Image 1: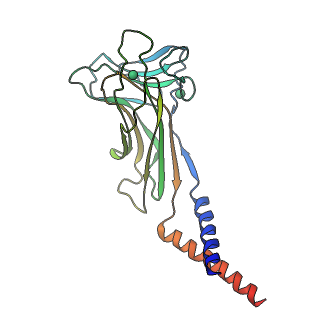
Image 2: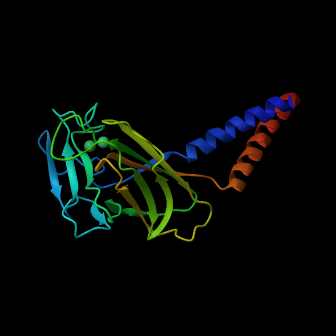
Image 3: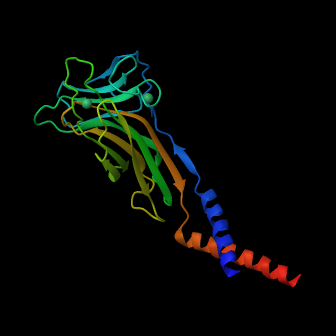
Amino acid sequence: MINHLLRYSVVAALIFVTDAARAATVLVSNHSFETPVTAAATFTGGMASAPSGWSVYNTGATNADRQFGVWNPSTTNSFVGGAPDGANVGVVFLQNTTGLAEAGLQQVLTASLQVLTQYTLTIDVGNFSNVDPGPFNFTGFPGYRVDFFAGSTLIASDNNTLSPGEGIFMTSVVTFTTGGSHANSGEQLGIRLVNLNGPGTEVNFDNVRLDASTVPEPSTALLVIIGAFCTVFRRYRNSLIS
Ligand SMILES: [Ca+2]
Ligand SMILES: [Ca+2]
């Protein structure tokens, strides 16, 4: 009987905790790079012109062979399945010039780091295919990094763990969970999408999503389980008496 009570109590507690941990979407401006609207097979951008909502992160700012913006892959063979979301994808195009380092797109969010919260940052990362002959060599994949910041502090990162094939997008997932306190709580969240400037010239990004779920303190979860157990036990005892 006690086993049954314990099982019911844990289930009740899990229902409570799950309900409390519902995810909320955190606003990422121009999260799918659909602004500016761009015609099929067209790049819109420039040396220092990031898409709306984003800014350029460029450690080689004076080099003209670095381009940032959006690309509409429709009617081209740059990606096997086209854009993962909407019409456009984000572009970080770096000619692999000796001595120059990584670059990318970045954004400071309006939301700030909260305690007792689990963050899940999900981004599609693409390898521009070299199928269509042109003036640039897209053979290979330069490597990528997704950085997640609170203020100027890097709190989580995906440093090139995926290896998408030519013309393929893969999904990067970065998670970070705060406890009851954090040194950077209250500081604005930030996202940086980086091309590591290896062979292949271009890395593309799309559909940047950030979810935040509240998590109960461990002591709270334990109290919920104990409370649920006591409630079920009391009902059982009352049923024996009546
Ligand atoms: Ca898109
Ligand atoms: Ca490529």
